[in-house]
Amino acid sequence: MATGTADKLIAKAAREILKPTGLFQVGTSRTWIDDNGWFLTVVEFQPSSWSKGAYLNVAVSFLWYQGKGFEEVLPYNIGGRELGYIEYNDNEEMFYKKIYEMAQYANKKVEEYRKYSDSSIRLCNFINSPLKVIEAWDKGMLYYFNADENKGDEQMKLLLKYAENEHKYEFDGKMHTRDGIVEFISAAEQLLLKEQNEKHLYVIKTMTEKRQRLRNKAKYKKLEIDSVYQ
Image (tube, rainbow, N blue to C red):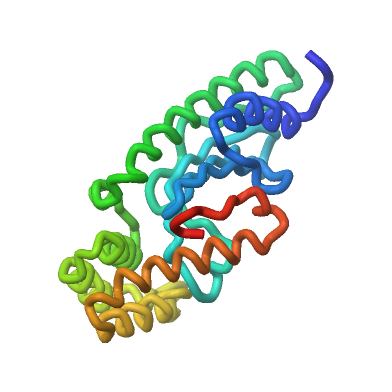
């Protein structure tokens, strides 16, 4: 096998496995994207700070996040770390074989998530976050997306309740404000004030704007215009 660094071998395996099935690489990074219109599946061959190699992350990323810190960030809403770490020990052939198998596994996970692109409400069963505010936000937006405004409202009310406990946290003997919670509180309050038929449209508008912002970044230029979500 031709000489190459760990990065080059990872890129080669990803191109051979992921690109033919429709994923695109984010710039020159180790991250690949599967576009499902209303959500993206992120495949990341995450590097280590201690050695050359890769972890694997495969996750659904919802497009209804706005505000500070979310301009181009793709949060891992469902899924995350898969398999174990593969270290590069200067054996190119062995490393490539293992990374190739890792890419094959990632592609199977991508195919699993694709099944939900037309049956979105089923994803609600997989939403789980250490922060209940985030979990309620995702579930609420998913219900609004499916035009179930009543269940969406229930989740936004839960969000406001959870925020009372999660807005502040103690560290090193001092109370701190958790970044981002204020934005979720404000968004939930505004949604609850909207007319019922406006909430589904709000979700669509939010996703459309997020897709547009991503496409404005050079590294996301391969994100195509979706016929529904643009």
